[in-house]
Image (tube, rainbow, N blue to C red):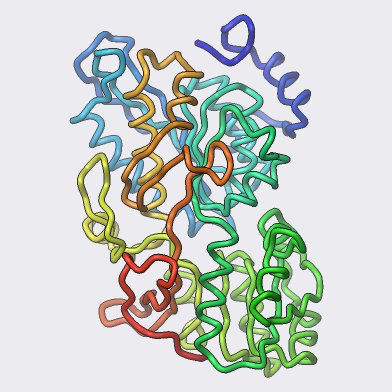
Length: 442
């Protein structure tokens, strides 16, 4: 098996740890399997030689604060396992059975790195897939970059994933790739929604002290310069510590400045705590655009009536006019299949998790051997693929290894068949994605 080293053999555990350490990537104590709550998906034999197997690692937060991001991953892994059992991937002219090895990172970056290392060393995966914000995606991507293993990440702004890992346009990553939207897209979507509500143009910023929060609040690439150009003033009380139960300082700063716009990128639990305390302390902006924290139905249902008209970015929905390159399912078909199988409402993470396997299948189909790591990585870097989350073009940038996905804006409204539904209200950047309502103030 190729690993990007001169010898071309898989490194042993000691060699791998030395490689990771030299690359400046954290490796954490404990057995590689200790943090893994999930078991590999059963492999179903297909025609081909007995050893013709593709092993795909899939790191997901099934538990912990980011669990809403991983809620659909079990469904996707099972559905993809069934699909590949009936439709083996042909590599080098031979059909290969596919083994999906799913691991729970427990919403912890240290564990994400640990289970990724285990998938490389102990399970010998040929490709790594990871989703669920930069907290998970960055740690896993770093381990793969150090090991010389192809990796595809999603559901994190490209700036958080690229610059947050020390990437530079003149020195991009060789083994790790991402498809997602960027901060520039969120800025345009948020500003379009803000402009449709009469406010004093004072915007309170709720930035956590993590990779996403630091990127969103960055004075060079984040929201401050972008929104200033549109006539808004950021009220920034400083980054808060994730998991905080006391947001009194932030609320006081927003009230003092009479911030009628709220923006931020807290995780679901943090935003629920903030929004409850804001209501108790008499702070209510006229519009609130919140990334990450209110993308999921369960979070909104937990907040209840005060969540009506909260706004967020929408990277995927059943109304997106795209279809899977693997199954042929439309976005609506995929959402319907998920609800039928689980009884749960769709979430944005569903589409992105499915698209990871679309990219994986296309990459393997483009090479002559599953052991050709560099060939797999190059296939991803040069890939153009129509997926259920939209057309992906890794050759277009904005930096090597990144493909952009479309982004629109939505607000939560009382639902007809579910307690709340996410209604698309802003599509200025992507008119091909239809709106179903207009922006309304809180």
